[in-house]
Image (cartoon, rainbow, N blue to C red; front, top):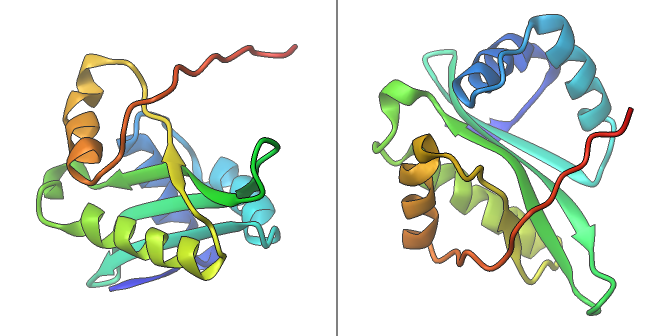
Length: 142
């Protein structure tokens, strides 16, 4: 079942962040989700079976400077590694696209690391109609 994330999902979301390559404890996830759930520009969906979170997608509604269109940026997307390839990600991404359309967004974007362990994810995004069009640059601020 796909549903909106709640505060009760903190433990499962922390586990999924570890699956995504970002080990997270419950206190950290609680802090993050408190901020995210209180901001209407964000939306988080989870995929749950038998009271266990098996996947999640988190996104934010953004506005463009160069066009008069909004877009959705997927900022977190992960499925339990033992269950990938079973359609959970596709269901979550479809739900994200439906939310984007309800918001009037004309595009969905996402970033994915340039690491070999992400190659399967990159191929999945291409099969889903995404195009690799940009290079991201990041700078840590002290």
